[in-house]
Length: 437
Ligand SMILES: Cc1cc2nc3c(=O)[nH]c(=O)nc-3n(C[C@H](O)[C@H](O)[C@H](O)COP(=O)(O)O)c2cc1C
Image: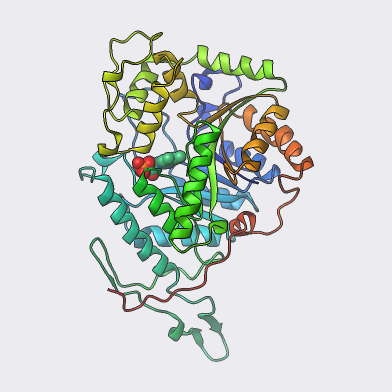
């Protein structure tokens, strides 16, 4: 199975207030190097950095300032040697030429370990001076964006650079192709000014799970990061995506589905529960309520009893009509309608794992659950979202990974050098698109 590790915030719930938490170091390179090196010690496929270009202060007072992913991953490339480095970057707030050269550069700097998590963004509009476009428009722009970026990555052939001192020929210009793209969103001549990188192109990762998002992923993604709260919804997603990938004319074996998996791990189940309970006891309910309102698509949950279910008339009527996001509001709406989910439990769910699959247990129990999902067509592996750090990362690497290795489910050693090698993905052939309009 494949295991990537996503770090999205210092700690979940009130976990940043635990004594062991190093939340204050969230912008320090040493902290990130330690995390990346521990993950590499565990032979994980990749470190994944989620991102949105916005800091929602003062409305979400506990939101942590963070580092920009490309800069952070470029520094980590120099301090690690094998682990994949996946950064999130928006197709809504970037230009394809800028992004193509950034990721090609990261792929060079890391010797072939770069991945791009393609997001259409629902946060950050006020920093870019444009209103948030409707979801179909954002996906249409994303589609053209990827076509352009891909053409740019393919615009210089692998063997174009001769640097032949004897003949004086630096570049074989017959192997460098402008892309001459002229489309609805972008006009880009090319070629890229960064040579073809070790992986040819960075690994394309996508997260977005509405019907439009799924079709988009089926056409372009090589890794799909999803949110599924239980095995049956993960199986539904897995089957549906494999069908959509095949219908798009691609090999489903060349696309890895990694649902998020949030973990509280202790040496025993009791210890794991104790860590979770401590994080719950330290959480800020008012802050969690603000976030939950957003996760449900911008509803008003004020004045409700924390220990009662959310009344149906406070939930979004039709999530498919929402502009910013659809899949996560739908997921939270379904949870809110599930018996036993009080408003307080919904807030805990949002703050602790935000609708991802959530495991609390000993290393053996965690390994059992991962094996169950993996062997029952629910996933090709997981996007680990550690709920407590750094202890939750260390125990995963030092105690869960060896169990998976003993069971023959996870690699003992890295077999190749690139992220494509780790994931079993082919290096893409060059596709020439010069003259395209
Ligand atoms: C598991 C998951 C992780 C995501 N991570 C990010 C992220 O790091 N940054 C971001 O701007 N959007 C992120 N998104 C949002 C998506 O890119 C997309 O904009 C949003 O989900 C709306 O599309 P959808 O309704 O198709 O899901 C994530 C979505 C999912 C499902």
